[in-house]
Image 1 (spheres, rainbow, N blue to C red):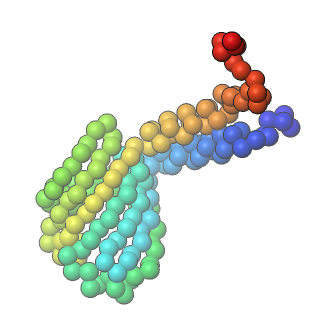
Image 2 (cartoon, rainbow, N blue to C red; image 1 turned 90 degrees about the vertical axis):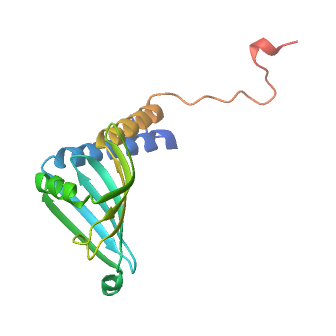
Length: 164
C-alpha cells in the first residue's frame, strides 16, 4: 500500500475522487436546501447557486447600477428552502433573449422586468446538472487510478514490427 501513492497520477486520481464525493454530497443537500454565494461589483452581481436543478453561475447586470457602488466588493452567502427558490425562479423570467436547454443543462440570457432586482436589467446564467459533474469526476479519477501509464521504450530500441 505504501507504493500506491507514488507518482502524480494516483494522487490526482484520489483527489478527483474526493471531489466527486463532495459534489455528490452537494447534490444530495440540494434537494432540501438551495445554497447561494454572491459577489457584488460596481456594475454587476455574480453568483453561484446550488439547487435541485444543478450548479448555476449567474451574472446580473441591473439597468441602474448606482445602488451597487456602495456594496462593491461585498460577498453574501445564504441557504433557503429549495422548493421556495424554484417558485421564485419562474417569477424572474420576463423576456428571454436566448435560451438553450437540454437534459438538465440550461444556458440563457434574460431581460428582467421593472419590479425585479432594482428596476430590471439583464441576467446571464449557465446551469450544469450535478450528475454530469459527478460522472465526469468519477471517470477522470478512474482513468488516473486504474489504467497504468504507458511505459516509454528505452532509447535506441525499436518496436517488434519495425525491424529490418
